[in-house]
Amino acid sequence: MFLLHKPSEKKINEFLTVQSELPFSYQDVGATKDHNAPENYPINHYRKELGSGRQTFKDAVEAVRQWQMYALDWTKMYPSNAAIREGEVVASLINHLGFWSLNPCRIIYLIDEESEKFNRFGFGFGTLPEHSEQGEEQFVVEWDKTNDIVWYEIYAFARAENWMAKFGFLYVQYLQKCFAADSYRAMLKAVVQK
Image 1: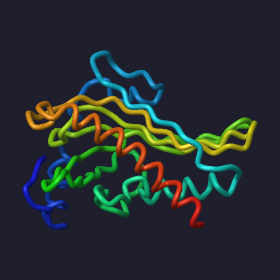
Image 2: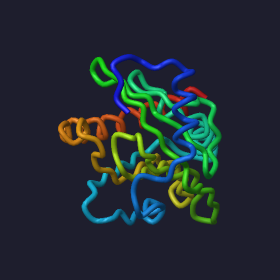
Image 3: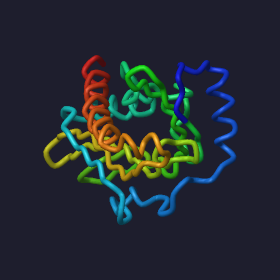
């Protein structure tokens, strides 16, 4: 949903209540889990090192739980204290050069894996009908124990849903790339400050 003014928290809560009753706005729900994007969707894949060691991984997990990847100057997650759990409905509020968009998603699955070689934590969420795009996004932090490196990764597939997003397709792709890099910096800051 595109807006000329920043919505109040009351409006956002009302919006989330309505969206929570609606189905996903696309097929292939859960496809990000295996990085198996459907055809005809642009893919955004970003993976970068956060640091090393068990403590860095723990801090990165906590940062994901607190939605730090959305703690940017131009985007914020609502509700900011939403639990990372299946079925949770959230909305990202994005400032686009003087106007706003409110984009609802529902968490589809969680990732919480531990083995001798790696630990992984994250989730995937998919778009709901009032989102400006159709698709899915996965956020994962991974501790590779074979080399002690902690990674931050985004894997997403999405295409424009409404006419504004379709008209500004190149701008939307640019924003996706900006979000990946900015969210990495926010995660890095959250991990380093611990």
